[in-house]
Image (tube, rainbow, N blue to C red):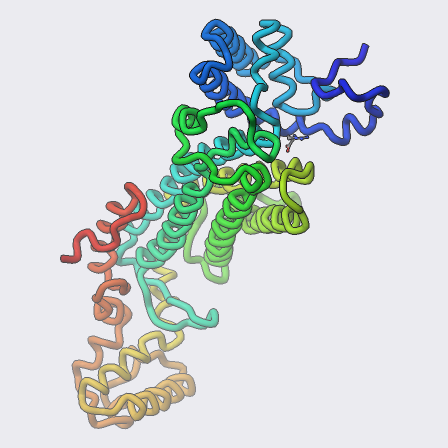
Length: 470
Ligand code: ARG
């Protein structure tokens, strides 16, 4: 026996079985059931408020919907592909359950404004959950930064040793990337939090609806200004996916560094065993699978963004069925970032930092050459001349197989009379990082101050960037 579709009055033939499955979205949009029911409850209350429904009808609808929600929660609800999507599944069940009053729920509404509303409610909740997940990773970064505020490592440009930095400073660089991601999601939330409901199919409705009432009931900041736009707009979804893609790009860059650092060539960190796997053939292997997978998963979220942009590009106003294709990329992006954030929130606090290897690596590669040039400048040499002198010192070191710290005063003085015994204070990597002690720089004392500010900025958004810089 075929199930009656809520829209089949003008049809004389049943839907082709393949087309029924092809056009259905319930397999993935059932995920919106809580938001769908919340939207329907608010809509029913509004209809009663303006006198379109009686209070008894409203109460029956609300009670029925909440019972359905409890069934779905419990996993006992039967979803039907013939009923196409989450909206018609729930509405049909309501009618079967409460009868005549249930048939009135869809008054002054369309699935077009309904689905746009559901999706916005869903993404609003998702943005709030994501904020918590990003903050958890940031907390982890702060804790490692605090522990390793004075651990010295080589800083790189062009992947060549550049200048020594502190590991804590590097962790806080990652913190900043994630902080901007939080800000982007918070900004996107403002445009998500606008209510399409009441736009109906595209033109609004002839019932005397009160959209402000519904918007307030659902916690929306406003009701959408234009019905045509409200049912067709998915740019909030594109923004969400763009923010997710950029977050993944950040996590991918972090992953790349963890993969490099945990290799035996670098040997800067050891990742916890619980986050790595072995090789079935090479007994010595400990592979950084989690960072590699996070790096790899950035590709799918970038793909989700491109899918959404392309989905919207050719659509005339107002609603088109194309929009049904918005959900899977969005859910995929959401699930992927939540999984990756969860993994890094767990992994990062358990990274073991190998201070000794990092220190040795920081000493190699003439990483304090800039400090020597700055020293000469302080002793009256022009910077360009100082640069030239140090270049020759480095050449001398390369030829003799010695790092700057290992040269004697006599050797150094052959290159410039401006060099004195105190040069060794600046040639050490410890001296080098300690000298960079202004706002935003790598000195351990600055890292500790930055940690204090980072903690304060973990709270509400947008963060106050200068809380303790009076
Ligand atoms: N399942 C549809 C979607 O995801 C719901 C809206 C359908 N509207 C319509 N007029 N067929 O977009």
